[in-house]
Image 1 (cartoon, rainbow, N blue to C red):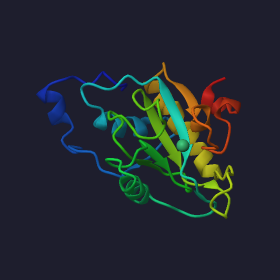
Image 2 (spheres, helix red, strand yellow):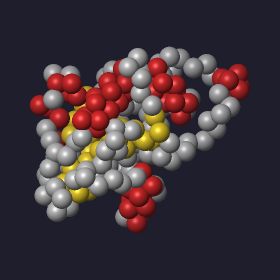
Image 3 (tube, rainbow, N blue to C red):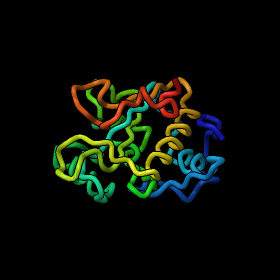
Image 4 (cartoon, helix red, strand yellow):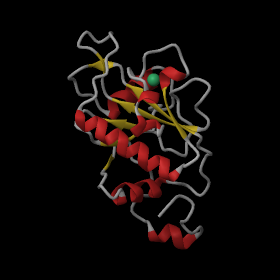
Length: 186
Ligand SMILES: [Zn+2]
């Protein structure tokens, strides 16, 4: 099932009574067929979805080898005055994919690009000193990122894929998305 194909009205609501509201940090499981990922995303797609023309990849700028959670990032972003976590998805070091801000809501991750983009954050991105930019992606994170981008891209075929560093003088996500054909499709 793709976005926009769910029937509107009460009958559609009653067919998916389980996910009434978005739950922060809930995990998305990706099967090779992507079937398991599609269903949870559809559950959080409202009747009117934003136009998405970019998928933007970030890192959390956390030290290599250390785990952090969606809840922690949510807390950091609230302390910075955001409504809640600014990213739509967070990929943990073990490759699990977690929901952040609902994708129908404008994120808070890339100045000037938030209105029509989806923000994905990878835990890590810094060396052990916590400040030197470093591509710290684990094999599991690399695979999960490719799967998530592929899935989102199939739902939003018009969207191009970028790193935060293409829009700001920052290292984030600590690698060049345009040099990874599996991500940027080039
Ligand atoms: Zn970033």
